[in-house]
Length: 419
Ligand code: EPZ
Image (tube, rainbow, N blue to C red; front, top):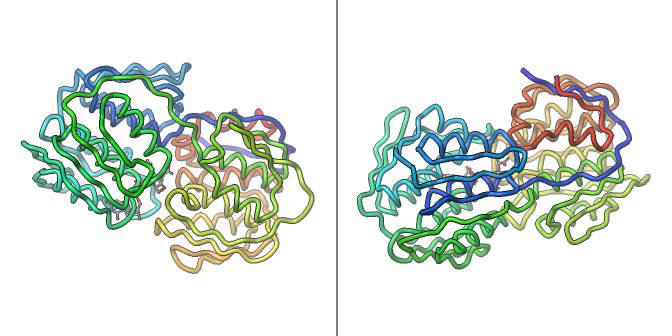
């Protein structure tokens, strides 16, 4: 298994460009199945999750041309020749569940194994099953897979009992070609939802309300293809800004959209982190004062994004005082705190959702494994800030979400090698 070897406390300095958003690209790949002509995606990050999602769409018979150097993918949905996604493919990535929507909307049937996903919680799919039934699908299941039969898919109304980003995107996509008006309530409002709606509308869809809690979709009979650039990855951008704060470095994070990180930036200001903001960049400044401990509570967009909870907690270990970290969305996303304690942090995990961080504490390098994508990058950040050497195993998890992360960090002066 590959690992990162990090020598901590190297001075960092320089500029790092943000890639296209993983959590946009994955959905655009699924959405392309709704189109009647090839779809070209640009600014697509070269990461494992994109490769897995492309593998899935290819397994349905769609044409895929992936130009890695150009960060471009062309998907031809006109050659889809099956509506079955194998159990072993489905469990490689959680958004595999998205494909059921386009398949039942266009072909009236779909068969899929149970989806995979990060070990950050139970990751149930009850909302998807309810929504697909509401669209008119009959569902049968075996221990390995689900079969959806929807000879006449119908428009529907759905009030989400809780906010789900991918379920919002899935039902929005599914409804684009189902006759009638579908109304989704208590929707996710993430920037990626808005970008997806804008693209589908550019192909002829009739979606209104994306970015608000209520989205209405009037079904159409055809959708053109098109070309679209992925929006910048706000999670990458936030991770690099936190790295600059954690290492007290001058790091300019470019090709990002600062307004997508407004909540995170406000929390950093409250801690006393110095940084400046431009139209498409954020630049951290070196500083010598001690940061102030603060409380964080994750919430769907535009709240404190859960995917930056782990990296942000690493920063909280360096703040003076007591911080409460409250992860409201997932019940399995705080166990990395044990790893930070092994590095010298002083964190009490009160329950699966809450941790108390006492700081500042000096961090020392350790040998650790990456639990999931976001906790994995948090361990990389901790290693870059720690005294001594840190070895991080299971870095396939980090590669799922961050393109060439070791090479890009080395360009800032980090002593990190992949071996
Ligand atoms: C998206 O996951 C993101 N993934 C996640 O990022 C992100 O952490 C999450 O939204 C929250 O913002 C992608 O966009 C690909 P969920 P999503 O499973 O929408 C409950 C990363 O690191 N729920 O819907 O799939 C669930 O238990 C990933 O990039 C049900 O109860 O999140 C949780 O409490 C990790 N039943 C909440 O909804 C369901 O059927 C959201 O979880 C579905 C979800």
